[in-house]
Structures are given as C-alpha cells and as structure tokens.
Amino acid sequence: MRSMLASILLVVFLTTPLAAQELSGTLQQIKKSGVIKIGYRESQPPMSFLGKNGKPEGYSIDVCQHIVAGIENKIGRDIKVKYVPVTAAERFAALSDNTIDILCGSTTKTLSRSEVVDFTQLTFVTGASMMTLKDTKIMNNFDGKKIGVVKGTTTVDSMKELFQDTKTDVNIVLVDSTSEGLNALEKGKIDAFASDQVVLIGLALSADNPDKFAILPNLFSYEPFALAVRRNDADFRLVADRVISHLYRSKQILPIYDKWFGKFSTKRPTAFEAVIQMNSTPE
Image (cartoon, rainbow, N blue to C red; front, side, top):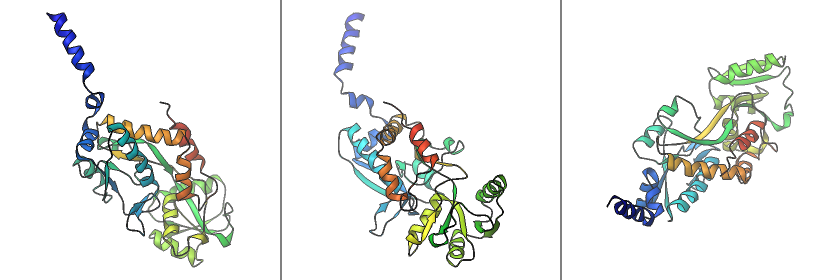
C-alpha cells in the first residue's frame, strides 16, 4: 500500500506543470495580475528621471526593461509595466508594502539597507569625480586650481586625501549645494567642481548646453549601485540577477552605458570595468 501511494504521489508530482511549482512571491503575483510595478526617482539623471516626453528613462530604467523581458520569459506571458515615482524617504517602504516590485534608480547597496530590502547584483558603480568646462582644458592637471565641493559631504574628505596623496596644491572652495557649484563653475569662480560622477553627469545633462562640460573618467571614492527588491524573495531576485549577469557576459551593458555616460567620457572607469568582470556570473 505504501509503495502504491508513493508511486501515485510521484506521478502527480511529475505531471504538475513546472512553472506552477516554481512560481511564488512576486513572480506569482506578477503572473496573476499581468503587471509589474517599477519604482523610480523622477529627478536622478542619468540613472532614472522623467524625460521630456513625460516617460521614465535612464540607465537603470533601461536595465529594468531587460529584466521585464526576463520575467515574461520566466512566467510565460506578456506583462504591462506600471512606473511608480518614489521619493528617497519612501522608496524602501514602497517595496515592503507592495506599492512597487523593484526599485530602479540610483540606490547604493549597503549592509544596513540589506536589513530592510534585498539587492540584486551590482548594476553600476560610481564615486567622486571632477567636472570642468571643456574650454579650460585642465583635466588631470589641478595644481594651483580652485576646486569646488559641497560642504559636509564625504567628497570633501576624499578629495583632501586625494590631493594630499598626490602632493597637489589646490584651493578647495566649499559651496552649499550642487547648483551653487555648477553656477560657480559656469561663471569661472572655480576651475572644477567635485561630486559623485553620476551627480555631475546629471547636472550636465540638465544644463542648457551639456556639450560645454568635461567630466573626469576616474573615480576617487566608491559607491556601488544595485536594484532593490523585497526581502526573502529569492526566485524573483534570481530572475533579475540572471538578466544582469547576461548583460555583463554578452557586453550588452556597454551600449546602455555609452548611451547615458559616453557623452562625457570616451573611456569607461576602471571600477565599472571591474564590475562587469566580477558580475559576469556563469549560468
């Protein structure tokens, strides 16, 4: 009798659709509703922002569009994308309360944040860099120059350490905001402005004439970006990780990078090249 029962259970198990066995959590929810809710920041160019056409766009948005295709392949149906704007303060709660399914923006992966949400593989890496006006032609030659930086930021300490290590004599000018720093740069009050590279690119993109700026490709601090998902949903995170790894292995990430960052640098930072190598996880 036990042998017969075991055989019946085995047959039932083998004839159950594989997808039905595997789908759980967010994947199951998306298949049932036919909708994935993507959280994004409306003013974080070039990672995520509301474009001139009124639609979300940016580097992270492009990566998430690939993930949507991966989810459709996993669950076996087309899905609609609902973009949900979130603020810095509410973005993680939006995952927990099911307002969004994935956070596609410029979120730094940290251990303390991992107590609240889970993170995918790294999607980008940034850090502090310098921006100048192209006409000044002082890239990599800052001796005796005035460098602006927002007061109270970690960039101040990183920059001081950089110039101390390289024995470069600069005049550090503290400003109250990035907009003040950009204004000082455009008016010639400073020779360069230091901030996170993605912030600098965002400032340049939003300026009237982005082509007049030049941004140093090298970084002198480290900020690892990843997409945030709900905690303890390994199946959904694995789909995202599989897509991200494929983008790195296939080098499809490079056109996405060049689309949003190549305008300001023909050379990709070594830190980003390292991310590509380290996250090209084999199948």
